[in-house]
Image 1 (tube, rainbow, N blue to C red):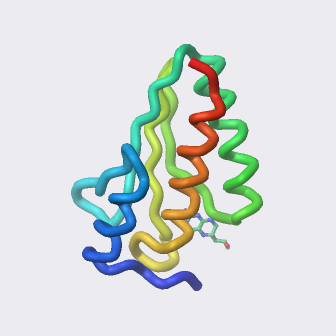
Image 2 (spheres, rainbow, N blue to C red):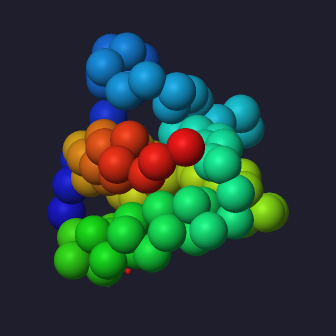
Length: 100
Ligand SMILES: C[C@H](O)[C@H](O)[C@H]1CNC2=NC(N)=NC(=O)C2=N1
């Protein structure tokens, strides 16, 4: 199983992933993505879901119209691991591919 990152390692990792922040009240990271419209938002979710399933690492997320709120944590490890960092980076890359 992936190792839970220390608070310091978590902060350090977050500096390299634009828009991702610590979630209050629990060990997790989060980002709110805002797209042009629902089509772009759902396209992002579809692409991200395929990657997440391949990684066997799944986001907690909520979609309202063109906004997608994502929270990532490794439940098995009780915190944030390299898997969350990897998925966060991948989601940023996927969002950039989405026009608008
Ligand atoms: C059995 C399976 O590998 C686990 O339940 C995986 C699936 N996806 C997961 N996703 C996330 N985000 N955290 C986990 O701890 C996790 N565990």
